[in-house]
Image (cartoon, rainbow over all chains, first blue to last red; front, side, top):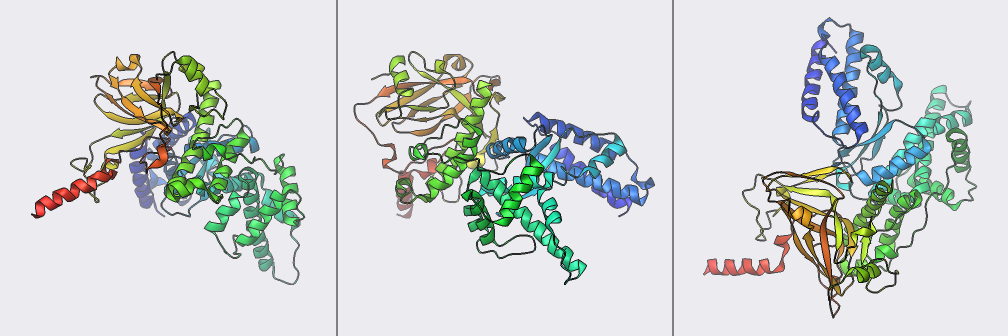
Length: 356
Length: 205
């Protein structure tokens, strides 16, 4: 990379900034982040790249990438675009597991139907923030937890149970549960090479991360995470990064049974208790489906109910025979359940605002 | 029969097995139940009309034309945030409250007097058995824009009891259990097909 390429990159950033700088965020944390981002851009654009060393150019490239990435997610996180209700549910969980944090969950909508992914490169990795502080004296008051999700599923509470799994990855990374567990429990195999030993440990680490995230999600939304896994990754066999779907479901079922003898699940529970100061435990309720049968949103009174209403939606959909489906058809009932879940959550938020 | 405060309170706050129960969720303040009507609040979601690339909204059942969604833009506000009603702009919005009416009670929706005086108007009948947030098509006929916080009590509903029951879901409904405003599905009306065939027949003679 030379300074001319960097200048091109800055011009590209300029165009993105021009498009997004007038975005209005009703969330003051996002407004604050955007203000700091614009301040950073001003500093960058006042610099003369032609006089910089290669090392300085590489640093500037990292900062431009950081700014681009932040814009991409912020721009997709206005109240009109972002799935506000489910993000509210996730933020409740985040505050429980990581009290007094300065994280903002932001979303980027993707055309790919399977593109659920969490990116915390701007959240947990300090070097880029340190670099910005050292170079320009700019400190971001908040950090972005970036979630990529399919555009077509914004109001879909069946598919979006995957977001609970993604949040599980973040909590895991924050406390390094899987990492510390795999390192502490790794048994060096003398019969294979050091490289093969490393690869084996990496694979165990990735698989452990997936199991943790599945169990984490199932605390709040029960076996709906298994149902979702079963149709998104049906019959997937084990890979370097993911355990076989059937194994993943077995682990969640072992956790939900409450009396597991599964060694890995037991170890994950014990490790979580030590590192996170919280237990992985069942945090959902089996809500009656009467309100959905009567086509009305549920009245939610607690955070536990908040997540349970999503599980109730899954149960309602899978209940057969289902007189509503027979009467109205599956397409309409699919839309109705999503609407009722969303309104149940939305009413809870409104009532909290009103009463506080 | 026109329902007044005592009866409205009985039906709204009644037990779950009350056959004529009127469901309103959320009912943030009991004071919304007035002597003659119930006040409803401005919801959080809006569809704003704007001039798109199509020359006109085509509601003539033309398969290749989306009649109205391309003429509306979605936007959202937090509860308590302000929404700006521009002069002479049509805004589709809905009540904050999700309602379900019994099969023998319908309601008639009008603006509260204070907001009529500002230049906003609405008029709607909600059929017995309806469930969902109530759609409102608000047009500001004032020459000035009007700012209104989301959650404001802007409309009032008068309730009427009928002598016979009417099932809402006895036929296919275009709008059911909606929680945010939806664009007009006018070109889904069945008799448009018939009108189209009459036209085609006349032109082929």
